[in-house]
Length: 298
Image (tube, rainbow, N blue to C red; front, side, top):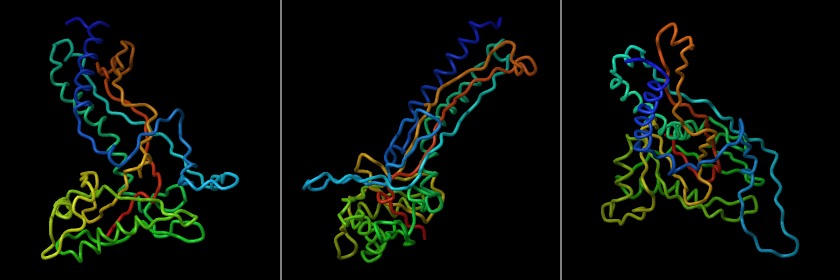
């Protein structure tokens, strides 16, 4: 086969089709616990997170809440997945061997938000959020006091007492959160996020009708979300994803796109007869309101 611009464009279109089909079909879970925030520059400023918006009774002048002196920015990262196609394989019309690579690139590109968001969850006890504390911490400042969204209770579903001491305690703690004026934030957790090792326990906790002689008060109170990106077999998380702002942020500057480098004068083509195709993206992740998430890390 004579290799020219028309042939190279046809190769690109074929691989891009494989990429896009896999991209569209790939399963993702990040959207259940995170919000997509578009980015128009190298980074986004999230200083607004210092104020949890609440309505108040209007008496006299409006009460204007200024932003606290926190600085929280999320800087976009570059991401890529590249395929190298041998010129001889184009000439010999044996491009079928590259279709699986293009499909896997599409699959990986679709799951990039999962990788970013669930890595944030796993590192939440060390990575800082808008108030300068780790996202999961025992001493988040609230007015003149502090509040905790972190404990060390193992998730248990064998008895009512154990369920109350683990899931029940986290649920009660979240519902008790107040703002800096002492008013309830109305937190209502609805997602129980667990690693694969805790899936059975979580599903029993959410579906069992009874614990022995006692009814299960937690049945169907949260959706179980299981993520293979969570590698700590004992850590589990309770999240409120009922509000417009989710606990985690997926910041997208450039969505994954399929690109090519096929110029005849390219060094890779000249030296190694290699054309390059692949996915590129610019994105990052971060933390929103800590009040919407609670971690138990035994």
